[in-house]
Length: 324
Image (cartoon, rainbow, N blue to C red; front, side):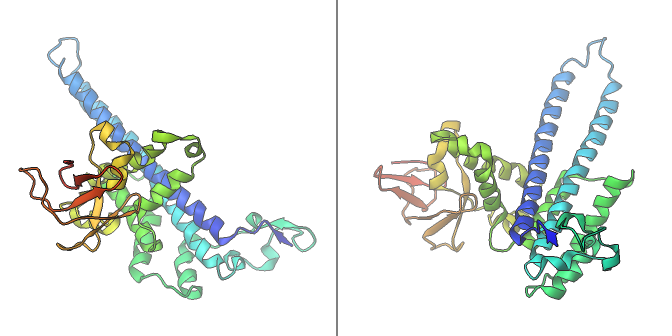
């Protein structure tokens, strides 16, 4: 008998975990690059020192770039693993036994007389998952997703299984690999809300109390800003549901520690994004807020997107942050 058969939700959650870990790795790389740049600037202050080897800078940059490539390869591998598990989860909704390949004579020894865990059986190859998915699942993925997943898998294989000097990964490219994969696979929950939910569910988050709990909102917001530095306006709108030019302050997130850091959480969008809309939706916490269409009292601000905090009896402009 086959035992320990994973449920579809097990595959799904494991896949999302890999995508979230890849996201964290990419954001850590952004911080690494920023810190490296600051160190180079500090070094540059002493470039006239006769004891400083100026020719070493080029070699240091080269070694840092090579180290970055290995880290990006790891993130790429995590993304591919996440995609495979989510696809397997969808297929297993029909039957987990569809994932088992090979003829019975090639199955684990004595599986007909002893209990054997599902993990001992060879499962379908990643290259066959798309065809299997669209054959057995009612909601088919578009052909363009097959092209995307095949390109992702090929680049992952090159970066992990060999040394291909022609393969040059970039942070922007790997960000897009993750976001495009998620966009194809998960339609009902935007990526930033998935990220928020993932952080909320981590064991260490259960230890957070009071204002510390709201650090999750702040963390996701900072990650969003970091990613936006590498994305075009159309990509930001596609993957985050946010217009780069018409972002508004989320009044819910604004009450959760952002002001103490002197940061305005501009992570909300009019819903729908029209001039007369009176609902604002946050792309991070997912909350909707009702707004008023009155003129901001700041002389320098043309905004008419105002939030009334009924508990404080206070109006706030969701563009400039002015309160009255």
